[in-house]
Image 1 (cartoon, rainbow, N blue to C red):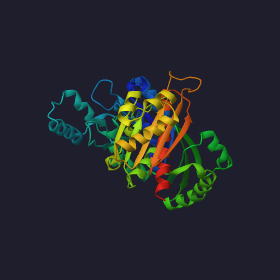
Image 2 (image 1 turned 180 degrees about the horizontal axis):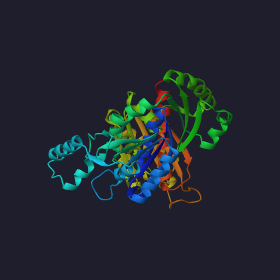
Image 3 (image 1 turned 45 degrees about the vertical axis):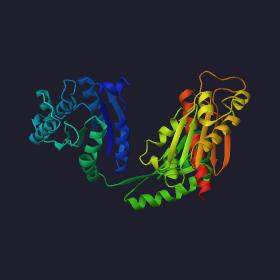
Image 4 (image 1 turned 60 degrees about the vertical axis):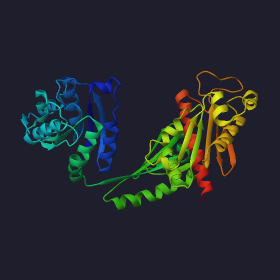
Length: 413
């Protein structure tokens, strides 16, 4: 089926809430062998909601909505769907009972307006909500289908997996399978140039290239009757692209450079200590987003000032005065200080100028030194990054992760 996604909520248009639902739904829909045709986001306006729904039903087999199922007056998604299909709203007693129990469990008084959520279009398939109060539903008229999901991502995700996914599986006679090739150290345009002929001649599988700060990924997607058939279609194309870009391949799957680095550290016998200046703790923060980081992360210092570099890492005043805080010499001294003052096996140090001020002709904004120390041997690399303050800091963090990953791979050979 061709499916469109309609996200409802004024907060989405005002930028107060990021519409992650559309991204997640698109992936889940494609994984089930269906195609996503349109994404639309509208505010809590009944006229615009009605016209958007009418448009999407005209160009799609099915529309999935998120949001607008709550108890307040601006929650009008189900009313609009019922009107579009000329259906009455009927009480779903089970949905109401579940709602009453949920309020009791939270020891909260249920206000009268909450009952509104249990009224659903007649004849619809109810999708009960195990994580919130608003149920979802699936309604159809002739050959058109609308499925309404709640807006909160954790509720939407649960309801999709439990109720909507089985429904969509029954409607699909094809399998869509994708493989991702993740790259580091090469830009999007350069990567595309190296595989341009493969992309130009694509039919099935299809190839798409994506870029984020510091990482490029290629998604190869095959459409087939079975998962095994799709896998066979993917293999030669993945192998061909890998051969062209082998010097930059991090790995496969929907993973980031930080994922790979965390896994390498977690599976190694080493402990890590970090000293960050311009990244301000970003490296440690990224690593401790993962459960299990305590297995390898011993400690991290944000030595932002010269005084901190002296007191915490024993960097000498002579080095700082002669070469400056942003220098190869200071980065080496930071590594030596980590080894001297901690018990870690691997040491990582970063110092640089993130901007937008602080640069000079000799040391421009974006100048960053990153160093690693493995088995008593230090290595420092100079980088000249471009971009705003956030981009420079993020590129520094990712380059540090890559140096860690490369060092672990070399050490564990």
